Length: 485
Ligand code: NAP
Image (cartoon, rainbow, N blue to C red; front, side, top):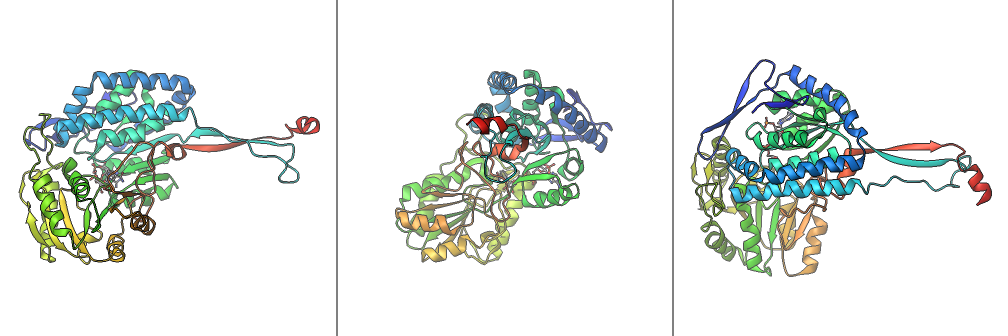
């Protein structure tokens, strides 16, 4: 597939390409252009012009066009889900869920923009301004660079592109290099639906090059990244040169505290969700902090009821519920992290084997708070490190030993214990009787604490991130009003 620049599907100027392979079979699926700096600069210049045209469409018109896009998503649902599965290695039932979430996210974005109200300031507060009408309006930022990770590419693309476009911005999207095809197709559907073609640019190529060129371009109003901490730090440094705004949803090492009084069915069920997307989730339990009195039961039931029951095989079969990691290299990295943790003293009690990009769900017991995995080493795979605790204070201390603060969960029947955990943890979210993987459209999600970012990507606050408030003053406009009121 080619990339989408200035409304055209194009190769890169120097014709260089990157292979996209199926992680499950190793087959070559397609190639995409490796964009050069000239391609990037041209796309951004074009997006600046496109944004002005797109913003001139009023909210009603933008809503109509994005509704047409949603019809196209419906018509192409099978193709999009299949593409996502083939390039990502996730089971197709999950891909269907992800494409359906695109639909829901755009629908919500269409609605919220209709309710973004400006303000009128109260008069008579400061001497000299009594007759001045002071109001605010919301304006788009301009061109927003949306940098998308590999794990939920369609869903996370939608959280960025939907609200940004609906609010009148143009987007320059850079999908992950390993799996850009579904995002490219979605971008094509936006143009087909009637979005100003120059307002929807999609550049392919490596983050270390293409991503950098996008970020350093002064015409970019905001960089919106979902990805790892390393990428976040690199982008923040580059963005600082032009004081470009940035919003980040970064990594995590979410604790799930399982208390002695927990509902064990619930604990096993919530923990078992970790096998989703082969454990490649930003939020959701990554450290299992379990009371010593229930640890044995928890580990036994987790293995018997959830890990031994996964269904592997043909990823296009709706019954398959467990796929591969994004690449053999990613799986090898998880394998290294397992070995590293064993060398630090953990004990392998289940799984641990890798074949290509496939990695078995793996349980490591006897993990202690001094080990890297219990602190800042994010494992993006199906790993269950078990850390035992005695008192709730100890569990909180273990949970807080990480520099991440994305999300967290606690399973307990004691409401006051739950509230103590909710108050004590420095994380963007705490789920009570759930894992930190909880994500709902409207609820502020993600970063906000420590190294996990500064965005709260959700429908109830996204407009604050993709628009800016402009103040307009009508001097002396209220003179007569004030005389006659
Ligand atoms: P990643 O390696 O950081 O890449 C994310 C995106 O950033 C990709 O498109 C990548 O391009 C690009 N990129 C990398 N370095 C860049 C740079 N210096 N400048 C500009 N762009 C750059 O992350 P990933 O492996 O795709 O995803 C996994 C990470 O994302 C995990 O840490 C996970 O926790 C986090 N994540 C967070 C959330 C959240 O909502 N908080 C959600 C999902 C994932 P290439 O693909 O070409 O490298």
